[in-house]
Amino acid sequence: MTDKTIFAVNDMTCGHCVGTVRKALEEALPGADIAIDLETHKVEFTGDRKTGEQAIREAGYTPEAA
Image (cartoon, rainbow, N blue to C red; front, side, top):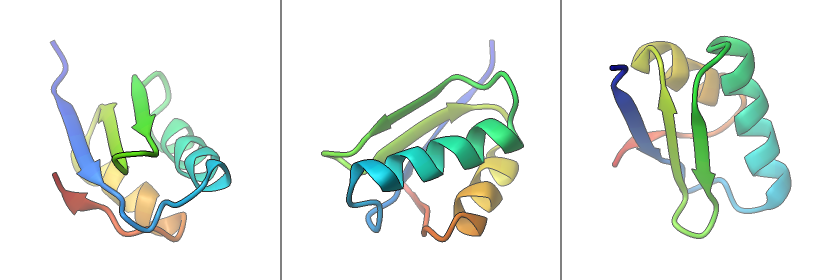
């Protein structure tokens, strides 16, 4: 079983933001399960936590522990 990581990404404010974060995670963590809820600003993914966090930051967003 792969652990899921959840971050709050409060500066993710629109559909374009969701797409940008999703693309960054897909590129950094191929095959990861990714779920993004814009309303709650939650990003959930499987795979390496630090790699995912770095990908979100490099995409221009601020992941915070949720």
